[in-house]
Length: 226
Image (cartoon, rainbow, N blue to C red; front, side, top):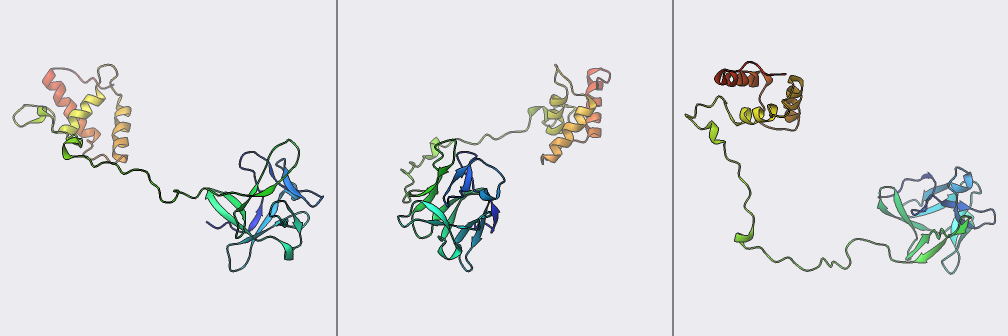
């Protein structure tokens, strides 16, 4: 994912320190701040995915010494060409184009520390396609059989049940738990929640009221809805 050109602070991922341009024409890390010497324009070269980086305060561009390690400030014509390798979210590795040299924040002291480019290999997914050993196939008799829910025997034809279907049976179990029966508002909220979750065959409050009334008549009880 290419980075959009703009003005950025360049953070060390292991601390809150940021890339800083020193007046001595050197580049290092410093305390996170909003000063212009800690803000950088990231610009891309037309027709490519390569970048130049310029400090806001001094208008100097980042370049690397002949040995490819210590960065310093130069005019545009001498700027180093850089690549930004996206890692995740808004994290990128800054790399000297065409090499394996990446910008490293030493972060070894409370004061400013000079940064450098070091030769290293970035993590880029699986190593040489090695995915480890292959799992042995399972025989048919070792594959668990999915649990199949069967209709409740209470609702079988001719049983004399007061429940019209499984949905009302299970709703009655839920709403009228012996220790803590649901209030009417709780019942209505629970039914609505079930509908929002995509549950099929959710009873209406009215149909359950009728089911509960039949149960109470059959059991010789009055209305016990709280």
